[in-house]
Length: 192
Image (cartoon, rainbow, N blue to C red; front, side, top):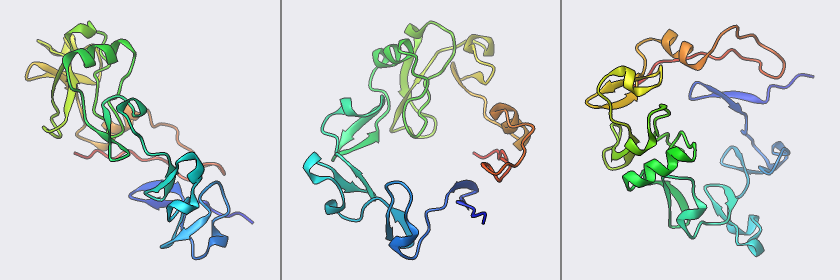
């Protein structure tokens, strides 16, 4: 019998973690049914408290205590790693030299251009002025060094898209076929 273990959520194929009882949650660590979804925990006692784990957003994890426990451009606040963005130009230079292309979970971008990393500046993000992002100065599009960046207001930025086909080209979505392991075809959608 073939059972589909995927579902469509917010226009993406994701693992189906819906349930009605704990018996529906037999895979991996998400073996508790809570409010119709399979989760790892509901309360701290569901976690390994001897190792200091707590139930945070239905996942067992040890709360962070220092920024060093978080990805770059994130900080430890109240036990969780949260997006903070860059704090200085020097931080951007060092991150570029370490080969880090992204600034964190929400995608604060560190330009991947081939320009001298020492030129990078920590400036307010176009999406959220409260969070800084690393940018590289430019005089023209050619100075950005990436096919997917343009020079805008003196700094390189991702070119974005105007059509779904432009997104498809950027993501390299081509020759998609369905298989048992991937019973869907990916579609690119251009959004703000």
